Every structure is written in structure tokens, then in C-alpha cells.
Length: 495
Image (cartoon, rainbow, N blue to C red):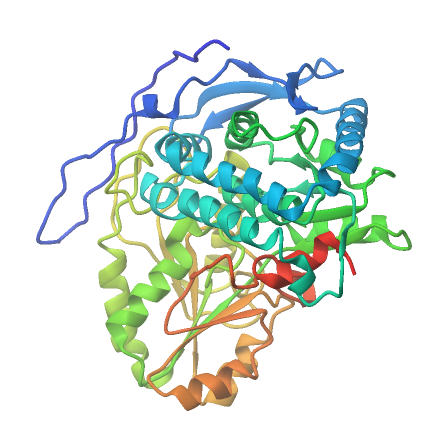
């Protein structure tokens, strides 16, 4: 594989305005990502193979608009080959004792740790998210997920799903672009631990870490055909989820696509789990510790540029502390550094694609047109790449599009409430039901509020905290099924 040697100037992270300190750039070397081939095929049956078609797509660095590599647009024939390879491998893989399957998962987890710098840099280059996040969150979570499910592989009889639970067969898995490697781990680790084989399709804007993971599978000695990766856009995903020889479909992505897959599989015997959109409310009561809550709000919406399905994109703050809280929040937002994702000081990196940037721009323009007041801290954005300033809207009503629709960007809408009952009513006034946050010093208020929120995950005095032992998922238009924990095994077992 040839190394892509094309170079462009990296964007410069912007220093916070009006602060006591300034920061010199601390860039990570892009060379740490290792060799990036000029073109990639699919990973089928343990080998990298050419596509049956001639169409190729390109993945670009969102921070520079530099083309990183070409990759194959998967065809129906490619999907057939991958599913056939997974089906062939299933008999031997599912027959292995759980303790033997666990050895492979442990090995993958250790290799991920050993290659963590390489994976973190590659993820930042392909996705646009800050290296601080890929280094300290994404890659460690990938290893943790494989370690955790390796531990379950020989204990399935005690998972609460009856004696001798059996794998369902071939799992078709389609993952999004916001957490490419982490979503891969969330899908593949429990599937392999329970004895299933996998065909995975990564998002068309972020295929590189999935293809690098294929190399890790070979390095770990994983039997051929247990994990197969077919690249392409939505056409490839549709061919995979509709394949007649697939036993289980797991999809993370947008609600409209999730609806389409659910309709597609209605009346079939194919198992389905969906993790879709969200419009989470972060509720700040008048007794909340303001500085702590501000940090939680910032983490809840500006982490990963707001490209998070469970992002706290609606702030509900009690009227009596609204002015004080918003002043502190704006002060904190003014210190956020926007720029080069490979700079270790960067807080907010690049928007993943021009299409997503257009979506964010459209909805924020609609917010202004509908009468909400927009505010962003002063910062200079790089001249190339896809960028959006952290943005705050006040004067938002529940009828505004920015309060109803998932923006999937660094945009926070602020609403107010007077009583706890009003806060719950406004928080639940959404078609989504993925996550929520509560900020108060009273434990009784946390329990009262959490029991009334229609959200699959409720955080108290924190936000965006994940653990492989804890189930995650939503309901209503945020999907159904759970990933993580003992609950995450169920989707891959015939129970």
C-alpha cells in the first residue's frame, strides 16, 4: 500500500480571548497515523479484496479538505460475498468454547492499546474531532469494550437469558461517522463474544479506522470471515440490511434511515436494534453548583463538535438563576479553542463534512429567522476546512426548529422553567427519548425528576459518562434495544 504523501498546512487553533493565559500550539504528528493507502478495497474473508464494481468514493480531512484516500463503493455482489464469508465462518466460530473466543477479544483489546496513538491520530484526521478526545476517550473506550465483552464470552449461561443461549448467526452492522471506531467496538465486541459473525459497513465519510481495525483483526489471528468490512454509502448499507441471509441488523444513525430499516424488516425473522437521534434536555435547578453545571453543559453540547446523538442540545435553566448561569456559561464558552484537531490544546475541531456544515448552518439561520437571539464567542476560524463557532441561542420557544430538530453540531438552545413539573414537561416535549441531564444538590429532586423523564439514560450532576458495563439506548424516535452491559448481549442471542 502506498503512503499518501500529499501535504497541506494545518489549521491553527485559536487562543481564548480575554484569558489570563495563552497557549503555544502543541500539534501531534500526522505521521503517527501510519501509512494511509491511496485506495482501499473491502475486507472479506480475512483478506483485502477489490470491489466487483468500479465506483470509488473519497474520504477527506475535514480540517484541511485534503483527500486522504479513495475507497470502494460496495455493490450488491460485494455484500453477497461478505455475508457468505460470515456465514461460512459462523459454524466454527460459534462452536468455539466461550473461553477461546474471549482470547481473541482480549488480544484485540491489547493491540488497540498498543496502537492507541496511531488509531487516535487516524481518527482525528478522518473525522475532524480533537486529538484530546480520540486519545483520552474514543480509543480507551474501544479497548475497554473489547476487554469487557471478552469477560462475558464464557459466562453467557449466567447472563439471565436462560441456559445455553445461542448466537443468532450473521450480524449486519451499520455505524455512523461521529464515533467511527467506538461505534465499531460497541457493535463488534458483543457480537463476537456471543458467537456471531459480522459484516460491518462504516460511514462513507469516515472509513479509515474501520479498515485499520481489519488489520488489527488479522494481527490478532482472528479466524477468516468472522469480521468482514464492506465500505460504501447508503446504497451499500441498504443492500446489507436487506440481505436475506442476515440474522440480525444493528444500526446507529439518523431517525429517518432507522424508520426505513424498520419498515424493511417488518414481518421478517431478522432481529433489529436501532440507536437513532436525540434532543437531550440538560436541566439546571436553582440550587445547582453553577461552575460544575457549566462544565457539564459545555461537555454535553460541545464535546465532539456536538456530533453526539445524546448531546445536551437543550438547556433548561430555572428562571431565578438564568442570568447568573448564562453569564458564567458565556464566560466559559469564550475560553474554548477552535482549530486544528491535531493540536492537543484544541477543544472544538472541524465539522465532519460540508453536508453536515450546511445542515447546521440551515438550522441556526432558522433559529435567528424565528426570533431567537444568537451568540457566539469571538474567534477566528481557519480559512480551509469545515468550521462552526460554538453557538448559544436564548429566547427560544418550544416551537422553534432549533428546539425540536436534531442539529448535530455545537449549538445550544436555552429555555427556562419555573417549577420542577414545568421542567419535566418541557424536557419530555420531544419525539426523541435518548438521554437527559439533571443538575441539583438535592438527591430527592434527582430521583423525582429522573423517574419522570422519558429518556433511556439520565445523568445526574454529570453528562456524557459512559462505561462498557452500563447499558445505553433510547425509545420513541431514538430507537430501541440497548448497547453495553449485560443488556447488550441480548440483541445477539437467540433467547
